[in-house]
Image 1 (cartoon, rainbow, N blue to C red):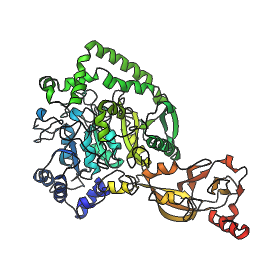
Image 2 (image 1 turned 90 degrees about the horizontal axis):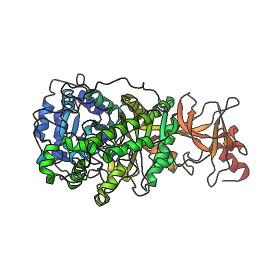
Image 3 (image 1 turned 45 degrees about the vertical axis):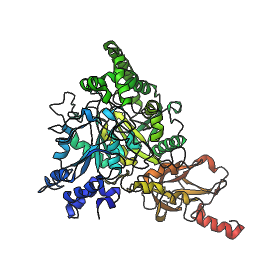
Image 4 (image 1 turned 180 degrees about the horizontal axis):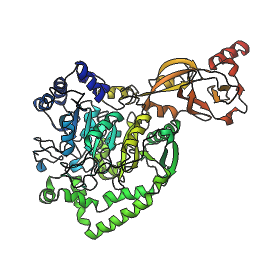
Length: 616
């Protein structure tokens, strides 16, 4: 069986290395499979896929080594084509600009030294200027899940390569959200590390003082492994920065999560994404996190500086000689943006630096009240046709939640949290971004792992076969295996009216058991579906029958969204003492409710009603 025939989990770092260890796969065989798949490129993911022979050089260099001494042994990765790979042209999506480096970028050198195998140079918004993936003369990069939609940018091909299962992870760059927006649009994780902790030596600059090398991955575990290899001070990088001490990782239940005020959220007409964000907030609560509403305005004001201030001139500075001599070779939209540098003087730059410093001071107190800031990664997604019609306006919309992060020296991690079931963008992924102070990268990765149910290195993102999964209503996590358990006690039990809300989300029945002996069950007055309320008590409790179902993590948010008061999701203790998420009832609803605990469970109560009252 080839890699192309396998699910996304087959391309995780752990899965590949397990196969290398048991001898069922070799790096050479993997390369043969990848070469066959990159020959056809309907998504315009590649500017220069490596040939079979070029990849084999790296694969054969691993002979005599193993996963035991190389953390990325035989792991394939894609490289955004503004990052150097020795001997392969770097174009930044502009053929006239292209050059062939003798040396790879610092981060690429580190990854190859750890055993990773480069598979190609990925398409991008030209000169990393854009968040949508349509600004490339090599073709608008098409979304891997639905080619009518944008892929996100500027690291468009990098995301598509991982989403299609051609690469286990990929490198992008992220100055304004380029490593996060494409991740959301493909159900992936997009890690934007703390600025300059991954060297940018060998990266074509966008805004050199703000640029980050980013990572696309299908799990927090894989992103963590790649980051650990990638970080390190490079003597030839004047911006290089050693990794400092950040906040200590801790469970979600011990953290405070900031969310913008409702009036400061923007979804640009995408009500489905708005509901999915609300569901993500409820997910935090269900995991024990504390929600703190914050004033988002200082962050929004900072975001407006990036393209509405002299940082545009830094984009010009990065390619000044080429741009001034060959402006006609630059994509029209990119040319318009970079040419805007002429509107700013050195005086304007110092005024903007002062403004940024003031905004840093305004936003800093937020971090005394919260540990992690949570926002949508993007408020909506557009079709390629829509984006081409309004390239500036719609691209700006995509950066609403991303443009401030590097200016404020923050770390960020985009994670998938659901899929739209209706609205203007049905079947397209949604996700949130976890944002923290500088050097909070480990904390964000731990939060993501817990959120996504990663007890091991299970993948959670899109990959080979994900479009089929979405077509049948599963989430990107469903195809990859990240799940969590949910206890149900009433209308969601097998054969009951609301059980379909579980099965349509590809949940499966794990076991039938009871709660611990600390609960009471009540028949609630709910319409049109009769439901019970489960309440934990200090004394006088009894075991209550229930079912435990296992659900794909990214479907959980849409499931919680369906739950109305007085019911909610909390922790339920099972007979064996373990805790799972499950239905609980708010005490206010028990005033006129009938205590039915003596029946031992909802189904037994319903049978008793039929026997004594003739009710159905």
